[in-house]
Image (cartoon, rainbow, N blue to C red):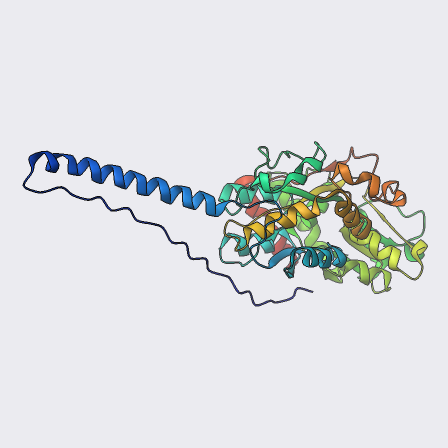
Length: 390
Protein backbone atom coordinates (compact mmCIF):
# COMPACT_ATOMS: atom_id res chain seq x y z
CA UNK A 1 0.00 0.00 0.00
CA UNK A 2 1.36 3.37 -0.92
CA UNK A 3 1.67 5.88 1.90
CA UNK A 4 1.07 9.59 1.54
CA UNK A 5 3.62 11.85 3.17
CA UNK A 6 3.77 15.62 3.57
CA UNK A 7 7.18 16.77 2.42
CA UNK A 8 8.87 19.89 3.67
CA UNK A 9 11.48 21.19 1.28
CA UNK A 10 14.27 23.27 2.77
CA UNK A 11 15.27 26.41 0.93
CA UNK A 12 18.96 27.29 0.93
CA UNK A 13 19.87 30.92 0.46
CA UNK A 14 23.35 31.66 -0.82
CA UNK A 15 24.85 35.12 -0.77
CA UNK A 16 27.39 36.32 -3.31
CA UNK A 17 29.80 39.26 -2.99
CA UNK A 18 29.33 41.82 -5.73
CA UNK A 19 32.50 43.55 -6.85
CA UNK A 20 32.05 47.18 -7.95
CA UNK A 21 34.47 48.89 -10.31
CA UNK A 22 35.64 52.34 -9.31
CA UNK A 23 35.48 54.91 -12.09
CA UNK A 24 38.22 57.57 -12.57
CA UNK A 25 37.95 61.30 -12.71
CA UNK A 26 35.66 62.17 -15.63
CA UNK A 27 37.83 65.14 -16.40
CA UNK A 28 40.76 62.86 -17.19
CA UNK A 29 40.83 61.39 -20.68
CA UNK A 30 43.19 58.63 -19.59
CA UNK A 31 41.01 57.62 -16.66
CA UNK A 32 37.92 57.68 -18.85
CA UNK A 33 39.64 55.46 -21.36
CA UNK A 34 40.61 52.97 -18.65
CA UNK A 35 37.14 52.82 -17.00
CA UNK A 36 35.45 50.35 -19.38
CA UNK A 37 38.40 47.99 -19.01
CA UNK A 38 38.14 48.15 -15.24
CA UNK A 39 34.39 47.51 -15.36
CA UNK A 40 34.90 44.56 -17.73
CA UNK A 41 37.56 43.07 -15.48
CA UNK A 42 35.36 43.46 -12.41
CA UNK A 43 32.41 41.87 -14.22
CA UNK A 44 34.56 38.93 -15.26
CA UNK A 45 35.82 38.49 -11.70
CA UNK A 46 32.26 38.63 -10.36
CA UNK A 47 31.05 36.01 -12.83
CA UNK A 48 34.02 33.78 -12.04
CA UNK A 49 33.41 34.02 -8.29
CA UNK A 50 29.68 33.34 -8.68
CA UNK A 51 30.42 30.29 -10.83
CA UNK A 52 32.95 29.02 -8.30
CA UNK A 53 30.45 29.54 -5.48
CA UNK A 54 27.77 27.60 -7.37
CA UNK A 55 30.15 24.76 -8.11
CA UNK A 56 31.33 24.60 -4.50
CA UNK A 57 27.74 24.65 -3.27
CA UNK A 58 26.78 21.73 -5.49
CA UNK A 59 29.57 19.43 -4.30
CA UNK A 60 28.78 16.68 -1.81
CA UNK A 61 31.45 15.09 0.34
CA UNK A 62 31.45 11.39 1.13
CA UNK A 63 29.12 10.83 4.08
CA UNK A 64 27.61 14.33 3.93
CA UNK A 65 23.89 14.80 4.63
CA UNK A 66 21.77 17.88 3.95
CA UNK A 67 18.37 16.83 5.28
CA UNK A 68 16.10 13.81 5.65
CA UNK A 69 15.90 11.25 2.85
CA UNK A 70 12.69 10.95 0.82
CA UNK A 71 12.77 7.60 -0.94
CA UNK A 72 10.39 6.61 -3.77
CA UNK A 73 10.68 2.85 -4.13
CA UNK A 74 8.91 -0.37 -5.06
CA UNK A 75 7.01 -1.90 -2.15
CA UNK A 76 8.68 -4.39 0.21
CA UNK A 77 12.03 -3.79 -1.44
CA UNK A 78 14.32 -2.66 1.39
CA UNK A 79 15.05 -4.19 4.78
CA UNK A 80 13.57 -1.88 7.43
CA UNK A 81 16.66 -2.52 9.54
CA UNK A 82 18.81 -0.97 6.80
CA UNK A 83 16.69 2.17 6.90
CA UNK A 84 17.02 2.30 10.67
CA UNK A 85 20.79 1.79 10.48
CA UNK A 86 21.11 4.65 7.98
CA UNK A 87 18.99 6.91 10.18
CA UNK A 88 21.08 6.17 13.26
CA UNK A 89 24.42 6.49 11.50
CA UNK A 90 23.67 9.83 9.84
CA UNK A 91 21.09 11.41 12.14
CA UNK A 92 18.38 11.77 9.51
CA UNK A 93 14.96 10.22 8.90
CA UNK A 94 14.08 8.00 5.93
CA UNK A 95 10.57 8.63 4.60
CA UNK A 96 9.49 6.08 1.99
CA UNK A 97 6.63 6.09 -0.51
CA UNK A 98 5.95 3.25 -2.95
CA UNK A 99 4.85 2.85 -6.56
CA UNK A 100 3.69 -0.22 -8.47
CA UNK A 101 5.14 0.43 -11.94
CA UNK A 102 7.77 2.52 -13.68
CA UNK A 103 5.00 4.18 -15.65
CA UNK A 104 3.35 5.34 -12.40
CA UNK A 105 6.60 6.78 -11.02
CA UNK A 106 8.01 8.49 -14.12
CA UNK A 107 5.45 11.28 -14.71
CA UNK A 108 5.49 12.25 -11.03
CA UNK A 109 9.26 12.74 -11.10
CA UNK A 110 9.38 14.29 -14.58
CA UNK A 111 6.81 16.95 -13.61
CA UNK A 112 9.19 18.34 -10.97
CA UNK A 113 8.73 19.19 -7.30
CA UNK A 114 8.14 15.54 -6.43
CA UNK A 115 10.05 15.99 -3.18
CA UNK A 116 11.94 12.72 -3.67
CA UNK A 117 15.70 12.36 -3.24
CA UNK A 118 16.21 8.78 -4.46
CA UNK A 119 14.10 6.78 -6.89
CA UNK A 120 14.54 3.18 -8.10
CA UNK A 121 13.72 2.97 -11.83
CA UNK A 122 14.17 -0.17 -13.91
CA UNK A 123 16.62 -0.46 -16.76
CA UNK A 124 14.50 0.68 -19.72
CA UNK A 125 12.97 3.51 -17.71
CA UNK A 126 16.44 4.81 -16.85
CA UNK A 127 17.20 5.46 -20.52
CA UNK A 128 13.83 7.20 -20.94
CA UNK A 129 14.43 9.43 -17.93
CA UNK A 130 17.98 10.28 -18.96
CA UNK A 131 16.75 11.29 -22.39
CA UNK A 132 13.97 13.49 -21.01
CA UNK A 133 16.29 15.13 -18.47
CA UNK A 134 14.49 14.01 -15.31
CA UNK A 135 17.60 12.47 -13.70
CA UNK A 136 20.66 14.35 -12.49
CA UNK A 137 24.20 13.11 -12.97
CA UNK A 138 25.74 11.50 -9.90
CA UNK A 139 28.71 13.00 -8.08
CA UNK A 140 30.80 9.86 -8.24
CA UNK A 141 33.43 11.19 -5.83
CA UNK A 142 30.74 11.06 -3.13
CA UNK A 143 30.01 7.38 -3.87
CA UNK A 144 33.32 5.48 -3.51
CA UNK A 145 31.41 2.20 -3.07
CA UNK A 146 30.48 2.31 -6.75
CA UNK A 147 33.73 0.34 -7.09
CA UNK A 148 31.94 -2.60 -5.43
CA UNK A 149 29.58 -3.11 -8.37
CA UNK A 150 30.10 -6.08 -10.66
CA UNK A 151 31.36 -4.85 -14.09
CA UNK A 152 28.33 -6.60 -15.61
CA UNK A 153 26.18 -3.92 -13.99
CA UNK A 154 28.45 -0.88 -14.22
CA UNK A 155 28.37 0.80 -16.60
CA UNK A 156 25.09 -0.62 -17.88
CA UNK A 157 23.73 -0.49 -21.46
CA UNK A 158 20.87 1.78 -20.39
CA UNK A 159 23.35 4.17 -18.71
CA UNK A 160 26.44 3.64 -20.88
CA UNK A 161 28.54 6.40 -19.33
CA UNK A 162 27.68 5.31 -15.79
CA UNK A 163 26.82 8.88 -14.87
CA UNK A 164 23.23 8.59 -13.68
CA UNK A 165 22.56 5.34 -11.84
CA UNK A 166 23.88 2.76 -9.40
CA UNK A 167 22.45 -0.76 -9.70
CA UNK A 168 20.25 -1.74 -6.74
CA UNK A 169 19.00 -5.30 -7.32
CA UNK A 170 18.17 -7.62 -10.20
CA UNK A 171 15.73 -10.46 -10.75
CA UNK A 172 13.22 -12.09 -13.06
CA UNK A 173 9.47 -11.94 -13.64
CA UNK A 174 7.42 -15.13 -13.86
CA UNK A 175 4.64 -17.10 -12.22
CA UNK A 176 4.03 -18.23 -8.66
CA UNK A 177 1.75 -21.26 -8.40
CA UNK A 178 -0.14 -23.21 -5.77
CA UNK A 179 1.01 -26.79 -6.34
CA UNK A 180 -1.86 -28.23 -4.30
CA UNK A 181 -4.17 -27.03 -7.08
CA UNK A 182 -1.94 -27.23 -10.14
CA UNK A 183 0.12 -30.29 -9.24
CA UNK A 184 3.84 -30.90 -9.61
CA UNK A 185 3.47 -31.76 -13.30
CA UNK A 186 1.87 -28.43 -14.23
CA UNK A 187 3.18 -27.25 -17.62
CA UNK A 188 5.50 -24.28 -17.21
CA UNK A 189 3.85 -22.02 -19.72
CA UNK A 190 2.26 -18.57 -19.96
CA UNK A 191 -0.71 -20.57 -21.26
CA UNK A 192 -1.69 -20.99 -17.60
CA UNK A 193 -2.84 -17.39 -17.95
CA UNK A 194 -3.59 -16.96 -21.65
CA UNK A 195 -4.89 -20.36 -22.78
CA UNK A 196 -8.63 -20.44 -21.88
CA UNK A 197 -8.62 -24.19 -21.33
CA UNK A 198 -5.63 -24.19 -18.98
CA UNK A 199 -6.58 -21.03 -17.10
CA UNK A 200 -10.21 -22.10 -16.68
CA UNK A 201 -9.01 -24.52 -14.00
CA UNK A 202 -8.35 -21.64 -11.60
CA UNK A 203 -11.83 -20.13 -11.61
CA UNK A 204 -10.65 -16.54 -11.89
CA UNK A 205 -8.09 -16.96 -9.12
CA UNK A 206 -5.24 -15.38 -11.12
CA UNK A 207 -3.44 -12.08 -10.66
CA UNK A 208 -1.41 -10.20 -13.27
CA UNK A 209 0.97 -7.35 -12.61
CA UNK A 210 -0.50 -3.88 -12.97
CA UNK A 211 2.37 -3.01 -15.29
CA UNK A 212 2.05 -2.46 -19.05
CA UNK A 213 5.49 -3.63 -20.13
CA UNK A 214 5.47 -6.71 -17.88
CA UNK A 215 1.93 -7.91 -18.57
CA UNK A 216 1.83 -7.11 -22.28
CA UNK A 217 5.35 -8.55 -22.35
CA UNK A 218 4.16 -11.86 -20.88
CA UNK A 219 1.57 -12.13 -23.66
CA UNK A 220 4.22 -11.29 -26.26
CA UNK A 221 6.52 -14.05 -24.95
CA UNK A 222 3.62 -16.55 -25.04
CA UNK A 223 3.10 -15.62 -28.70
CA UNK A 224 6.80 -16.12 -29.43
CA UNK A 225 7.58 -12.43 -29.88
CA UNK A 226 10.11 -10.12 -28.28
CA UNK A 227 9.24 -8.11 -25.17
CA UNK A 228 10.51 -5.13 -27.14
CA UNK A 229 8.51 -5.46 -30.33
CA UNK A 230 7.79 -2.33 -32.33
CA UNK A 231 5.23 -4.10 -34.50
CA UNK A 232 1.68 -2.86 -33.98
CA UNK A 233 0.40 -6.15 -35.39
CA UNK A 234 2.25 -8.15 -32.72
CA UNK A 235 1.24 -5.69 -30.01
CA UNK A 236 -2.41 -5.95 -31.04
CA UNK A 237 -2.22 -9.75 -30.77
CA UNK A 238 -0.81 -9.45 -27.25
CA UNK A 239 -3.45 -6.87 -26.30
CA UNK A 240 -6.18 -9.24 -27.48
CA UNK A 241 -4.76 -12.05 -25.32
CA UNK A 242 -4.75 -9.87 -22.20
CA UNK A 243 -8.24 -8.57 -22.97
CA UNK A 244 -9.54 -12.12 -23.37
CA UNK A 245 -7.95 -13.11 -20.04
CA UNK A 246 -9.57 -10.25 -18.09
CA UNK A 247 -12.71 -12.28 -17.38
CA UNK A 248 -10.52 -14.92 -15.71
CA UNK A 249 -8.39 -12.46 -13.72
CA UNK A 250 -9.06 -11.70 -10.04
CA UNK A 251 -6.96 -8.51 -10.06
CA UNK A 252 -4.18 -6.56 -11.71
CA UNK A 253 -1.94 -6.21 -8.70
CA UNK A 254 1.75 -5.34 -8.21
CA UNK A 255 1.77 -5.15 -4.44
CA UNK A 256 0.05 -8.06 -2.66
CA UNK A 257 0.15 -10.84 -5.27
CA UNK A 258 2.46 -13.04 -3.16
CA UNK A 259 0.27 -12.67 -0.07
CA UNK A 260 -2.88 -13.45 -2.06
CA UNK A 261 -1.22 -16.60 -3.39
CA UNK A 262 0.03 -18.08 -0.13
CA UNK A 263 -3.16 -17.15 1.74
CA UNK A 264 -5.17 -19.29 -0.71
CA UNK A 265 -7.09 -16.40 -2.26
CA UNK A 266 -5.43 -17.07 -5.63
CA UNK A 267 -3.71 -20.06 -7.16
CA UNK A 268 -1.62 -18.36 -9.85
CA UNK A 269 0.25 -15.07 -9.57
CA UNK A 270 2.33 -13.08 -12.04
CA UNK A 271 5.14 -11.41 -10.14
CA UNK A 272 8.78 -10.74 -9.34
CA UNK A 273 11.13 -13.50 -8.24
CA UNK A 274 12.21 -12.09 -4.87
CA UNK A 275 8.76 -11.02 -3.72
CA UNK A 276 7.36 -14.39 -4.71
CA UNK A 277 10.13 -16.33 -2.99
CA UNK A 278 9.80 -14.20 0.15
CA UNK A 279 6.06 -14.89 0.22
CA UNK A 280 6.64 -18.62 -0.22
CA UNK A 281 9.17 -18.72 2.63
CA UNK A 282 6.66 -16.94 4.86
CA UNK A 283 3.85 -19.37 3.98
CA UNK A 284 2.56 -21.89 6.50
CA UNK A 285 3.42 -24.72 4.04
CA UNK A 286 6.22 -23.43 1.75
CA UNK A 287 6.44 -26.74 -0.16
CA UNK A 288 2.94 -26.14 -1.50
CA UNK A 289 4.19 -23.31 -3.73
CA UNK A 290 6.82 -22.62 -6.34
CA UNK A 291 7.93 -19.91 -8.77
CA UNK A 292 9.24 -20.27 -12.31
CA UNK A 293 9.82 -18.35 -15.51
CA UNK A 294 7.65 -20.07 -18.16
CA UNK A 295 9.36 -22.06 -20.90
CA UNK A 296 8.54 -19.40 -23.50
CA UNK A 297 10.83 -17.04 -21.61
CA UNK A 298 10.34 -13.91 -19.55
CA UNK A 299 11.85 -10.75 -18.18
CA UNK A 300 15.19 -10.25 -16.51
CA UNK A 301 15.61 -6.77 -15.09
CA UNK A 302 17.85 -4.49 -13.09
CA UNK A 303 16.52 -1.79 -10.77
CA UNK A 304 18.71 1.20 -10.07
CA UNK A 305 19.17 4.04 -7.61
CA UNK A 306 19.00 7.51 -9.14
CA UNK A 307 18.40 11.14 -8.18
CA UNK A 308 15.53 13.17 -9.66
CA UNK A 309 16.78 16.28 -11.43
CA UNK A 310 15.47 18.46 -8.58
CA UNK A 311 16.15 16.23 -5.57
CA UNK A 312 15.92 18.54 -2.53
CA UNK A 313 18.59 16.71 -0.50
CA UNK A 314 21.22 15.55 -3.01
CA UNK A 315 24.01 15.04 -0.46
CA UNK A 316 21.86 12.78 1.71
CA UNK A 317 20.88 10.93 -1.48
CA UNK A 318 24.51 10.30 -2.46
CA UNK A 319 25.32 9.16 1.06
CA UNK A 320 22.37 6.74 1.00
CA UNK A 321 23.48 5.25 -2.33
CA UNK A 322 27.00 4.80 -0.96
CA UNK A 323 25.52 3.19 2.17
CA UNK A 324 23.52 0.65 0.15
CA UNK A 325 26.58 -0.16 -1.96
CA UNK A 326 28.62 -1.08 1.12
CA UNK A 327 29.54 -4.77 0.84
CA UNK A 328 27.80 -5.93 4.02
CA UNK A 329 24.77 -3.68 3.53
CA UNK A 330 24.38 -4.97 -0.03
CA UNK A 331 24.42 -8.53 1.29
CA UNK A 332 21.87 -7.67 3.99
CA UNK A 333 19.61 -6.28 1.27
CA UNK A 334 19.75 -9.50 -0.76
CA UNK A 335 19.42 -11.76 2.29
CA UNK A 336 16.25 -9.86 3.19
CA UNK A 337 14.45 -9.30 -0.14
CA UNK A 338 15.85 -12.37 -1.97
CA UNK A 339 16.79 -10.58 -5.18
CA UNK A 340 20.15 -10.94 -6.93
CA UNK A 341 22.82 -8.49 -5.84
CA UNK A 342 24.78 -6.51 -8.45
CA UNK A 343 27.36 -5.86 -5.70
CA UNK A 344 30.34 -8.15 -6.29
CA UNK A 345 31.87 -7.21 -2.93
CA UNK A 346 28.70 -8.44 -1.17
CA UNK A 347 28.99 -12.06 -2.29
CA UNK A 348 31.06 -13.32 0.68
CA UNK A 349 28.36 -11.99 3.03
CA UNK A 350 25.31 -13.39 1.19
CA UNK A 351 23.77 -16.50 2.75
CA UNK A 352 24.82 -19.69 0.94
CA UNK A 353 21.20 -20.85 0.61
CA UNK A 354 20.42 -17.60 -1.24
CA UNK A 355 23.44 -17.78 -3.55
CA UNK A 356 22.61 -21.38 -4.44
CA UNK A 357 18.90 -20.78 -5.04
CA UNK A 358 18.04 -21.05 -8.75
CA UNK A 359 15.13 -18.66 -8.34
CA UNK A 360 17.45 -15.93 -7.09
CA UNK A 361 20.44 -16.73 -9.31
CA UNK A 362 19.20 -18.72 -12.33
CA UNK A 363 21.98 -20.58 -14.10
CA UNK A 364 20.21 -20.65 -17.49
CA UNK A 365 19.31 -17.17 -18.63
CA UNK A 366 19.09 -17.94 -22.33
CA UNK A 367 15.33 -17.29 -22.55
CA UNK A 368 15.35 -14.17 -20.42
CA UNK A 369 15.09 -10.77 -22.05
CA UNK A 370 15.65 -7.25 -20.75
CA UNK A 371 12.89 -4.73 -21.39
CA UNK A 372 14.42 -1.90 -23.42
CA UNK A 373 13.29 1.58 -24.33
CA UNK A 374 11.37 1.39 -27.63
CA UNK A 375 11.43 5.16 -28.11
CA UNK A 376 8.36 6.70 -29.68
CA UNK A 377 6.66 3.28 -29.66
CA UNK A 378 6.68 3.18 -25.86
CA UNK A 379 3.30 4.88 -25.41
CA UNK A 380 1.68 2.11 -27.46
CA UNK A 381 2.39 -0.37 -24.65
CA UNK A 382 0.63 1.82 -22.08
CA UNK A 383 -2.29 2.42 -24.43
CA UNK A 384 -2.61 -1.29 -25.25
CA UNK A 385 -2.60 -2.21 -21.56
CA UNK A 386 -5.26 0.35 -20.66
CA UNK A 387 -7.47 -0.79 -23.55
CA UNK A 388 -7.00 -4.47 -22.68
CA UNK A 389 -8.04 -3.93 -19.05
CA UNK A 390 -11.11 -2.04 -20.25
